[in-house]
Length: 282
Ligand SMILES: [Mg+2]
Image (cartoon, rainbow, N blue to C red; front, side, top):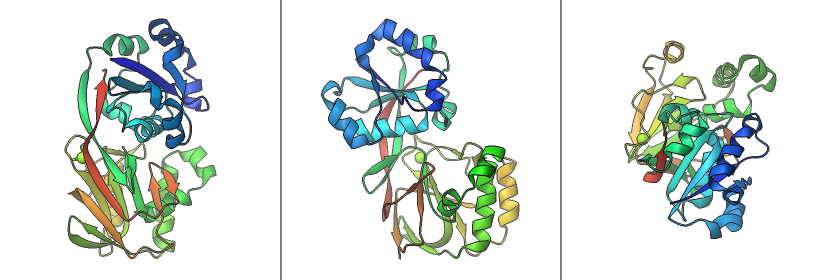
């Protein structure tokens, strides 16, 4: 097995843990450590020669880093891992990855490999989540000032503002059934936005994505949101699905993918079961 490490030299999360490079260089050599690029296709062109199906691609970062690496290299290898140096670390937290670099490096060779699903939207893969309707408008219009003060709570304010000010109806066909919704979140991992748990039954290892919808007739939105805060099971509807189509797309329907607004029109979102083998060092 070969190991190649990738880090984002501009990530604040990485810069505060830059010292992890030294023990990696000591063990694997400088030639196995590389910088990530913003565009996965560019990364593929630059690095595809050194990566084959015997390679474990390891991100020194968080959710964003792993997402770029999977999109860049999943055609060359299906083995990925992550050592937490990121700003957003949902995957690290849910899988229970060690934060100790020496435990990590010592454990790599005999680590358990778990199969993880990915989501696919128009050929782009996501590991965490995507959202549309009010959810994406909330991400798009979130106040940077409130984000600095309140962190993830700023998205909740933004969500409420969007519910009262925006008119959105999106028609979704979910495994053959039609739903009209105002907002939808599609998740592969349990945690949403760093602090919220909409559906306790989400698993990245079950071959399904979880669709969380706020339906038009849903009158109990306030008590629902309260339950989310209390980390209880919310009464928002959760549907586990394999394939979802979006009908009646117009310019009002925004999407967010892992917290970034996407400019692409997405028509189909589906699960890729067992997309990657995650080398898990606890
Ligand atoms: Mg799943």
